[in-house]
Image (cartoon, rainbow, N blue to C red; front, side, top):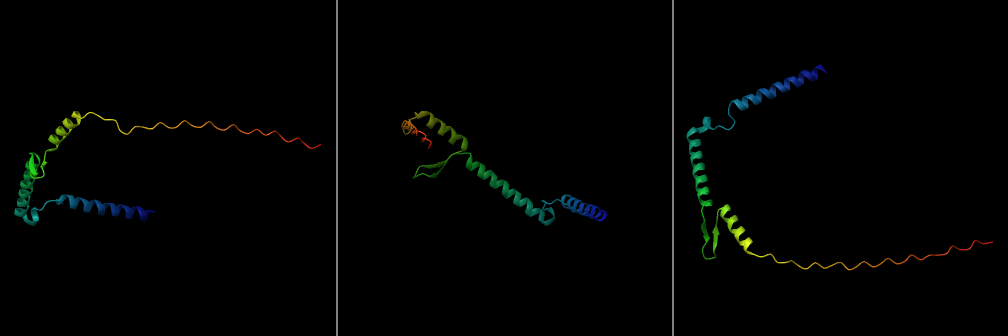
Length: 117
């Protein structure tokens, strides 16, 4: 029993120590590897994000011959709402009424057989 408790405490201490070392050294920092490269990559990332946001925030032609455009989501929702509100709802397929249920057949009554004498 004591060996199990002591072993558990030792394992817990090792786990906490490794965790603190990992957190303390900055698991996601690349400054130690190559600081200039990290700064350059972040700049490329920010430039790419800005370019994508610019492309997604303004309408543009994808294929002018086919009439395909790209729109911001909010504008597409507005246009769809306007188009749907302009349409009048039409009935779908007519619903067939279920045929009336047949009345159950009367149960045949059988007279009990006369008891032999």
